[in-house]
Image (tube, rainbow, N blue to C red; front, top):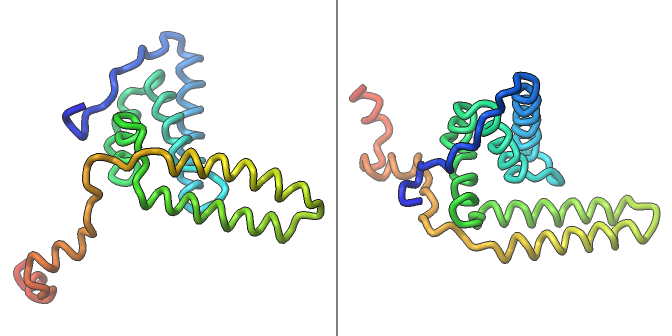
Amino acid sequence: MDDPTALPEDASVCASPLRRRLWLALGYAAVGLGIAGTVLPLLPTTPFLLLAAGAFAKSSPALRDRLYRDPRFGPLLRDWQAEGAIPRKAKAAALIGMGVSWAIVALTASRPLVPVLAGTCMAAVAVYIVTRPAPSRPEPQDAASDGVAAEGGNVSALRNEA
């Protein structure tokens, strides 16, 4: 994909209204879980958004396009679709979240086997995450600091111009 905003090829939209509604419901549920995953440490975000994109491709290509163009989630989806890449910040957040989750499990588990099994699963996922490449495109800089630096750092001057 040469264009960073280019979307993957459209899958065929379901002809059956019932199946289309089921795919649509799955897409909305997956988006909800993906959004919840942005704040809950054990719940991943990107896999649910990928599931939502696939479900929307079969039910509503317009919703799939909207998801891929979303300023927060679109770059993650496009990076994964194009390169199987995970940004460094997302890797760090996932690893920290898994570490905190494992610590909670280890401190609260009544049986010693539970943290061992949870830790083994989390370690396997951590290895997978760490071995994914970083996106080849540069990560965006903080927009607020760019705007201030470009205008000489005078925020009041920006307000007076408007």
